[in-house]
Image 1 (cartoon, rainbow over the protein chains, first blue to last red):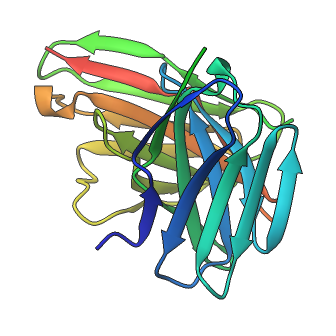
Image 2: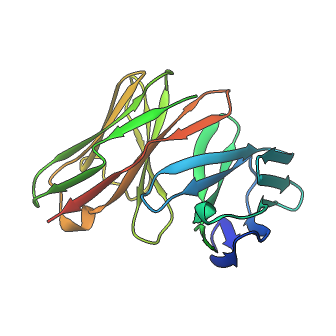
Length: 110
Length: 115
């Protein structure tokens, strides 16, 4: 069983739909990252969370430390949001190593 | 913002040759950089942690004599794939963080194809 699991693995939606991607982890963590990987391979860090909720534009990320669960939401989705979204956890304080989920491939259809 | 420059973005080489990939932090000092490998349709896997001025820490199963990492300055880490073979063909990507600043930045990645 992977330490970090994401669902769904693949998601196709129409432009404008509200998107939710989930991440569950089984280890204690100091922080959780949501990353976006575009088809060319480049990775962008979207959020780093250790508690609560963060919002940036149309993206919202939440984390529940007790339940070991995080969600990434995209409002008013757009074709340019099509990418692989990856959840990654940092296990220890002062230990910056990341353990990655397998990613969610999101496709937004115009 | 923190920017990490990685190059080359693509490299094709013959089997048996060595390939060097560079990762530079452009506007900050990175005491620690990480090197990852990603096979098609798989997630990133940490290969090693590169620490400035000291030996890299390799993950289990990663051959340190094959994947040479040098972190000679606070702004540059290099990964050299020695005696590359077709099974080393992969996407290699580095990341760096500013300790205590909650900033994590990735390079654009290097796609290696070994013929």
